[in-house]
Length: 292
Image (cartoon, rainbow, N blue to C red; front, top):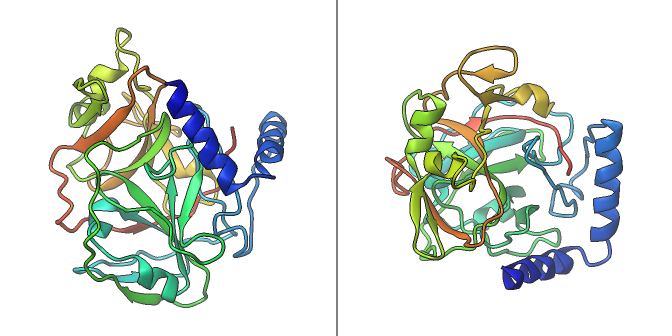
């Protein structure tokens, strides 16, 4: 446990060795003040911001004020990215070479990525335009940002990169893609399998019970693809529908799941019916930043 935590600190210190402490202090001040920060400019959108999140508020990429971006399509690796933010299922990007994103001046964002398991946003490419270790795959989801004013057509070719069966999946929020039909909270959590480093496997529903206490029962579904404020972009998956809750997660949608600190780390997550070779819905969205 201590070794893993030290590794997390080494990773984050390498990414922002001078700014990390100051950013944490700034994030705390902004949270207490109830201020939502919206960062503009490409320099901030290429990995130079570190965004933390607590269990009460799922994170969103730092973004300019983009309203109602249209939805891109993904027929067999052919993507159309409209200006602004797009949400993409990991199973659509799995087994694909991301280098063309850099060539087309597009940036992919991953939160709490297994390659950078420190509860921060990482990007491909990085702030200097260099490739990073992000390997998109199911069941995760990712943001892609198009800083231009026109839609970008990009073809992602096949890649030989593989994903380890023993990933370093950190505690905290994880952005994921739901490939099933509309489902209640308990039905959805039953379809998510968590495997731990000691070999234990259980459903996310089991992980949320009081005995295990390994995952939060709070699941946040992205329901408003045109919102620029995270408070209106997501709803909590609950037993009823209201201004802040939703009784069922829609089919083929995106959600945030929170893993708690545990003695044995999660090394694999899987959602029933999600295959990295199949094609899923790709939906555009715009949200605002949140801090820890």
